Length: 410
Image (tube, rainbow, N blue to C red; front, side, top):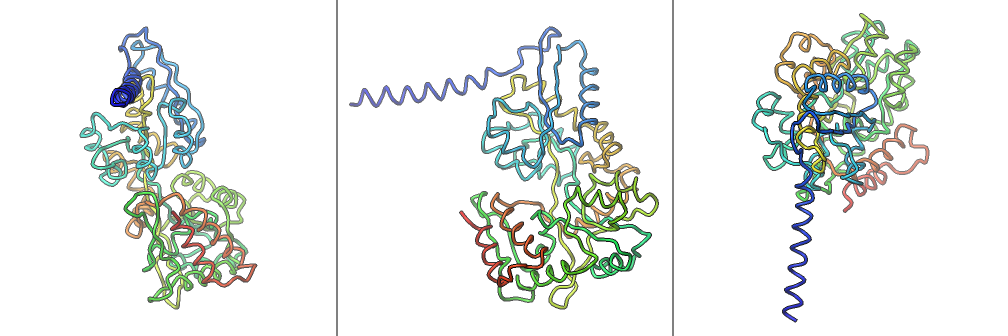
């Protein structure tokens, strides 16, 4: 019996050893120009032109050191983790993802700690470094420090005084037959109404499940107070619940004069509104007779290197190239996205950007997004009912209780 147990343990150890060896064997053999290096890069569709240019400059810079075959594939940043963990060995070598996915990717072994971590830390904003760090280990390359949202408004229709409050914005929109838009199908944006109250949401110590008190029935601001405010907003003729894409379409066709979005739309908005383009922190909104400052989630975009890449050294070099100073500057010029690189962030071009300035102003009222996966659907369902005017007539407290229970589910 003891011999059988011993053989079993040896077999298990051998299996683990072989598994480790298999991963370890996936290393670059050399920097020889004859080496064929095939790499796949994942990123947002909007980044296709930019990333193609960056990949070309990388190949030019390292010309003769390898036979490169680098391809770009569209993969949404918000779904990157789920797709990648569905098959690590078939996933991209280099990929763009939102910082709230870094813990899960590191825990799953999809990312290895960055070798030249101190160098990367020294070149990037501390908030972006923190967002890419798990248990004091840097697991990804900071790419942007602008994954948040603020208010765009058309100065032709909305004054600097009106833009301070959501009431003023809605009045201006209604008076002109236009709309202020916000995406209530996205829990990311809905956080704005709850985030600056005494109502709480966040991760439990297990790093997976959430706690949520958005249904709280006591205190200066209760969950039902927020729900009633949302219904009031939804009932305004100046409001429209629209996705980010629909917001931009409205900006282009003239039906939208204000909306909550991020820097990724700054170029397109400016092209439509020109010198009338305005950007500011989120306004206050009326809740239980008070003016509450709207909050926001904040975060960063990161570049990861697949721990199972066949060419980890070249993949790391490419990731570092995508996130270097020159290419973060290029990203701002082409996409209007705020850099994590300190040299670029301190440049006059960035400091003079209305969108980046608004984001920095909003940062005082923002919170790094750290919620588990069960946060999104219950909040979106609740907010959808509010946006539609609560058509079922269901008791608001009951809806808040259902939402909080769903967010906190284990």
